[in-house]
Image (tube, one colour):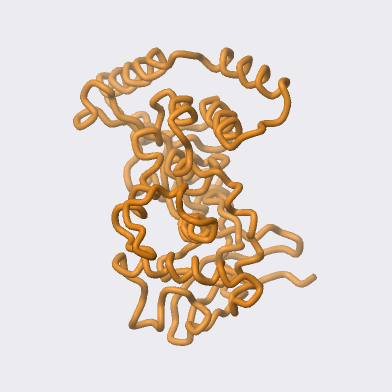
Amino acid sequence: LSPIATGDILVQCPWSLVIGSDDLQNQMSSDDMCSVVDALATEFRLGQHSFWYPYLALDDSLIQSRLSTLWDTTALEELQGLPPHADATRHAQWFTTVCQTDGNNNLPLDQHDLATQKALFSFITRASGVGMVPIYDLFNHHNGARNIKVRLVESGVEIYATTDISPGSQLYLSYGIKAASTMYRDYGFVDPPPQVWTWTDAVAPSSNRYSFVLLPQERVIINPTTELLKAGVGSVYLEDDDYLPTMVEEHNRAISLPMLQHFALGAQMLLESLPTGVEQDRQILSKLQASGPPSTGTELDVLNAIEYRI
């Protein structure tokens, strides 16, 4: 194995292989998203006869990922109101109310055929800003360890190294700087630190919004600025032993005592509003796991929701 140098191109995908965009000047827009999902569903129905079969078959088990958009009321209630409870099913709602697919508009997602469900889940979890890009969507996400990036050129989509990469190292893209609840809703997992957590007061959600970034080594940024959010969650400064800690310390020290008290009160109110605490949730989870593997999708979703709460 050879090392990869900063700037080296790792993947080149021509526009002809991108599902959703024709070229640099004709890229996928929000109005095109439904047609991309519809096109994917058609290819899934074709199975091995599809030109895209080798690509789509790489993740044929995607339907088993059980994103919250497919959860029923029983599983959603297990979030206990924690984000993303309020918009956990937004993708299914978008699809059933906006997309005109085979004349089945407003038909609940679980009543569509398996190919349509796979297409929607593929689009949610794998699409880039220009559509479905083979190989690109197979790279894992990690903001704190990102070492490759995407760029659009006349010939297509390129993935290149943003830093020197040693042989045997994992390659990571970034899916963007998003709240942990959004990552869970859209991809079914929560990043390792750095993590962005946000919430609002149930009493006055429009006026009381809170956020913090949980960094490695148990460092925290309270109500981060845009600059700190990019520095703390991106991979630029995480390996710098001095720069980021100094920024974090200066930022947190500058927060006024009333603002800190307000933040602490908001966190306390949120925790006290939950029916169960961490230790109770661990006991509940342990008991459910001891009863055997889940036999239904709902049972699996309930387990996932409890793990997310913890």
